[in-house]
Length: 400
Ligand SMILES: Cc1cc2nc3c(=O)[nH]c(=O)nc-3n(C[C@H](O)[C@H](O)[C@H](O)COP(=O)(O)OP(=O)(O)OC[C@H]3O[C@@H](n4cnc5c(N)ncnc54)[C@H](O)[C@@H]3O)c2cc1C
Image (cartoon, protein in one colour):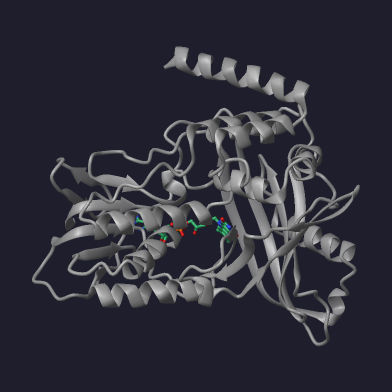
């Protein structure tokens, strides 16, 4: 185990705030602390890995003009949603779809860490002991590493209880480089459902062009089971064919793989008085889509604002309860075959203005807008899923 940053005598390190897990959620918190000019706060980051470089690409939508804008690789005010029935060009104004690679985010977090004079402990954390006044972070052998006023814990973990539906969003992307103009940098493809659909689940491809010669082309599935290595490559080759790309004339510069949970199993965001869970572990992953970044950004900002004002760093829940219920119903409808995935997303995008859909997926729509979104889904199958979900909840409650 080793440490860097602020000098101190010995373990445990005494701090006001410990970030346990230093990935996406923690990096956004560090950047937000810097943005809100928080000073004098003693911070420690505990993670066996110091995240650096390119290990993921975040795509998300939002209003332009925040302090991450200079870090974006690209952004688009129009995106395409494609189904076998046709191509829709969605104008997102006032929002925009944006692409942020992990390297500049981790660099931004490292700068913030330095300015905050944070202590970095490159060791895995084990149990957390919260006595209501302070939290002791132990290593897996039970040695005390940190004593903190508050802990923000973003280590990956399973939901508190298994979901009634547990799917995965799993994907492979190729960063493709061309020698001549090949991609349209003005338009990203948000979802392209012309890919062959799996027996259970839904698949789509997408394209995020950085310029006319460099783009991320990705194949994604929502479903219960992963593919093997050759399965992802074959699916990507098939999608490249659909796009009319000549792979023999392109170089695969990087490969990006990922698996994100899509489940109605509950993620506990406040396991004890002074421990707050963030990121996927804290429920920031939207169950119906796997999108996580916007909720992590929102919560990081709330945490930093609270600390700047001398308040506890407790953000609002990542999504309203009614959205989690709607997602549970949607996941059930898709999983039990009440509704086809392509039909579900086609109706969502065809019967709502794009801004409403995107704000809904971010969890920030009003109840009236939510009703409009619900009305756009097929009534009978969704009613079946609502009833099935209610029965599932009742059975689970009786078992408990
Ligand atoms: C390849 C990929 C692409 C994605 N793209 C998007 C996207 O386009 N849009 C979107 O909204 N979401 C996306 N996501 C989902 C989500 O935004 C990311 O997974 C995000 O990084 C989640 O942040 P996190 O902090 O919860 O987890 P992570 O970033 O995974 O961080 C968890 C950290 O915990 C650390 N850790 C593990 N065990 C311990 C331990 N015992 N002690 C201390 N630390 C520990 C790990 O080393 C890691 O640094 C993507 C995910 C992946 C994997």
